Length: 167
Image (tube, rainbow, N blue to C red; front, top):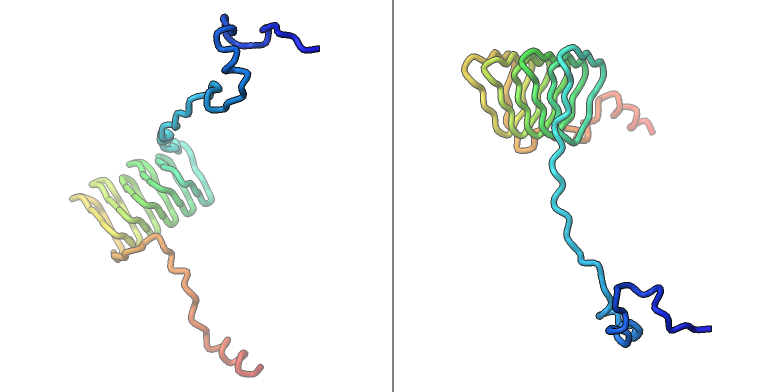
């Protein structure tokens, strides 16, 4: 019923560790060594080619580089708008680098307009850099949390007050 053969035991000379392997001591059993995984490499930025036209919003937690045309809002971690790119909509990112044209609001912790930038709209930022030669039409506002789009509780309208007073 029981066999003393070592057919299923690992290693070429299972006879030397016969007593140790059969004791069932988990401390002496071979345990695969734990190696912590290295931090994952940051994926490269998604790129939208120069001949690409997108109508609609774009949302990513990663980085994105726009070289084409986008008609819609863009939400990203790092948003780079290339020299030949045009964005018509709101740009919201931790870091925004504008080399091309933006028609709409720009919100970012760090906003940078390079010398080739053309921005028509408001900029809400924590820190900003505008290079000499950049064209900008709009207002600039510094906020500690520029990514918060201001979705605070709206003030009640007079019409809403009148309807609630009747109840």
